[in-house]
Length: 283
Length: 292
Image (cartoon, rainbow over the protein chains, first blue to last red):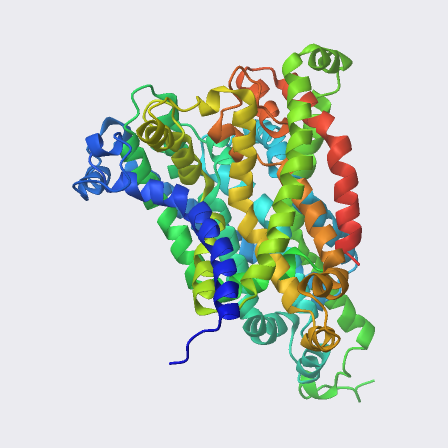
């Protein structure tokens, strides 16, 4: 092996000088979460950097719902799952239809709809939360899963439409023309030509909508309140209100809650990064 | 006239003229747009109009103006925007240069670096909140172990608490912007750097004369978009400080919810309406940029 030159060592050292702080900054809150999840109660509160007796006991309590705060853990997990998946499916259906109409069928007024959607995308969701809360009350949907599902579909659709429209504009027009020449009807064009070609973008958008809904806190805590109806983030937020919060259990639940989106992100990374970076900023 | 009897419809009916086909397409198009238009009318147009109607009384704005918490929240929002965003975007610009490096360990680090963005806010914010708990938190425990003194009561000092909320916001959103800027950097053709290399440019000159001119538009767009999203960042403040101590760390995004919880709906809407002069021009500029 060749000995590295002094200059190479210097470059490596400078890179490490950036890399190590970046690593610590990124991982510290996550490590802290993990540390609490594997620590028995007394270790957790002693400020140790590694527990003397690492244990999976906390997971047992959470999965077994063996604590007053965790009575409804599985129901809440289920709620989060159902809501996230429903938002993913509904967003995909609505956004794909709209993007196809705007980009391929060039429907009159399509551009206007696109601009309305973009406008919605840019209005911060926190500012829409209060009127949305009242609206759901007026529609009689409060404390019903549909309120959260519809609210999240409203928030996810504009971006989904936009990303799909950008991707769809890149497909060559000749494909449609050839299919129409062969006698394809519009539904056939959609099903046999459009959908297969759009698959990577559809995966990216579907994953985006599911993650958005799974991770949502503000709308979930405004729109849902019954212990068996709330989603996991709301349950975690409710821990905060109590004086005697079992923090090690809170962190364990938090870790369990954070794992599915992280796994999903890495599973779909290729599609998501492509879709997001293409969609988020076009310069 | 019987000469036009049809043997089979397909054979003899002339193909529909192009215009008629177009109009069936248009009908399909409108039908496919309908679901989104319904969602838009029911959950955007109606709530916004209803909200503006709730915020119609001038008295609400007077009350808001006299509430010191509102003034404080407005100032906090500006601090968040000016300091938070510029800090975040400059770090992202710097780190995008670091992460385009192809060394194996940097590739691995970039995989981990995405995590804050990939995991939901609430567990990590709660984790930080507990890490800085003055009595049992890890940070003060370590400070005590090394110095024998008690650490500061982090979240009880409005200045420190606001700084930490900004830090939390940066922690969460830095990966996303770094990723976008990395994409921007990778789009710069290699030969430009090679040419600069041949001319003997220093790393700073390469950045100044090659990287920055190609990235400027992207950087500006990112900063604008980041401003809009930061204005709407509810989680970083609400979950870390709850707006406290003494409601001194609220921003406009959490203030609306605070009034809602206090059952002052008109004030809540008024607070949000007050943020619009800040939001709407940004939204307008962004739409102009993106719908080109």
